[in-house]
Image 1: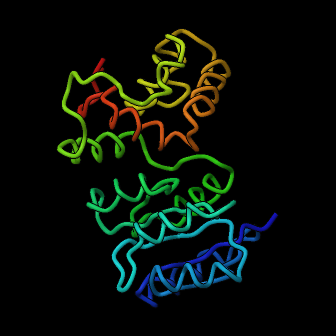
Image 2: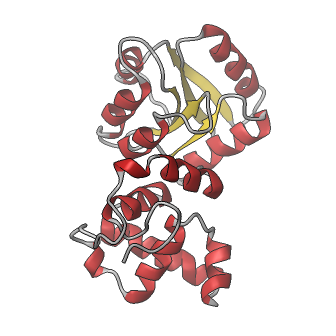
Image 3: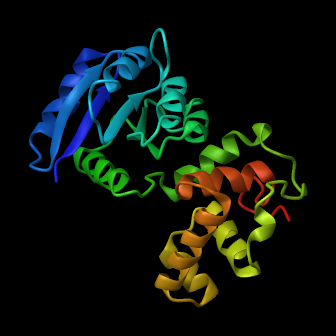
Length: 225
């Protein structure tokens, strides 16, 4: 199945470069482009897209607000935010707005292609180490340490699910969580799926953001409970 991609960036040269990389892939097709968030939303009204590569700093409507509006639609495309700097101040807001992840604009082509395929399949593409540093950077925006989780559904989690959620929020992969808790990777995957369902979250990115926002995990990677 061909992955239909939309490029959103105010720099035409960058869009051209990305288009050339994607055009060489048998399973990808660039079906639309836009120079800012407002144009992207307008184009999406008449074009079916699977994955949007979204710049953040654009005129008229930036990528964060565009992502928020796109992800609020029924059956929206996946959004992968592209940033210039590893700790772009917009990245955290972009994840909260509904993006499935973010990557640097100078990412090697192979990693970009893998990210597009991962996002399309429903996975998040924020590297654990980058997630930790991103959230540490924005710790002033998050609850103070020691604060009890306030999300109304967290109490629905079992003790094991809560434990798994804390490790996901600390950036561990399913394999690493399995090793830490002496479980099979399949069991961890099942726990993660139940966490997403109970908390009405879309992916691991939202699990991380929620865990920090509620104080379940403190910036720096420790438990806030």
